[in-house]
Structures are given as C-alpha cells and as structure tokens.
Image (cartoon, rainbow, N blue to C red; front, side, top):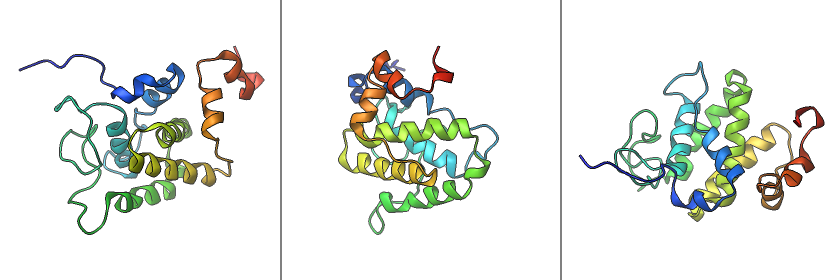
Length: 174
C-alpha cells in the first residue's frame, strides 16, 4: 500500500493567511452530544470535503455526493444530480440544522459559522464558494448579525495583530 505524503489540507488553503487556515481546521471537529447522522454532521461532512483531502483517495472530493470516505468525510447526500442539484438538496440539512440550533453547542456553531465565511469567500470553485457564502449569510442573519465583508475578514484574520485587535473585545485580548 502506498503512503500519501504532504499536507492533508487542500492546496488552495495553503495560500490563505495562517489565521484563516487555523479557523478552517478548528471548525472540522464535530459538536459533542449530537447525532452522528443528524443535520450538523451532514453539514460537517461536506465542510470537511471542502477543506481536506479524502484519506482513502488522497485527493479532494468535489461535492457532497461523491462516494468515498467514512463517517468523517463521507457523502452527505445520496444519488446523482440529474433531477435536483446538490446545491438545492443540501438545503434539507441546512434547514434542519437551523431548526435544531438550540441544541447545538454555541462554541461549535461559532467555529462552523466562521469556517463557512472563509469557504464562502475563498473556495476556488465558484459553485461551492457561492453555496458556502449563502450558508454564511443565513447563519449570520439567524444570529441577527451583519455579515462581515471579505475585506473585513482579511483584516481581522490576515496574520496581523493590529488587524485582529481592531475588532477584538478588550476582555479577550491577552
């Protein structure tokens, strides 16, 4: 068996500032105490496919349908896209996640929202990027927050202490 070498993260991520890379990685851990096959985990499987390479293949999976992976990065949907595209079918998981949000740990939710923001601005595939951006807008709006612009994201998470401090709360500054 050949051993894969190199980083597990997809190549496009290596061009991002370290702070943005860190956010993408931190959001991959699932929330404790929720169903392994519930909406949060189905969203997270798709999220992981957009950030890391699949261990069994050694490459990125292109959509939430492609067969491969286990419970960590397996498919979030079954079937093909001939009748309904995955971009629409994944909304079942998004809607259910928002309905179940009161039972989702806040810490996990914030990591996921910030990760979706980065995918929504930075993912190289336009369809995937648009899907994640729409999810980021829904998550921000659900929390009654004004979404951050890409420029604001790049200042806050651009590997500059001054940029990060610009929006940091004094209680959390070390």
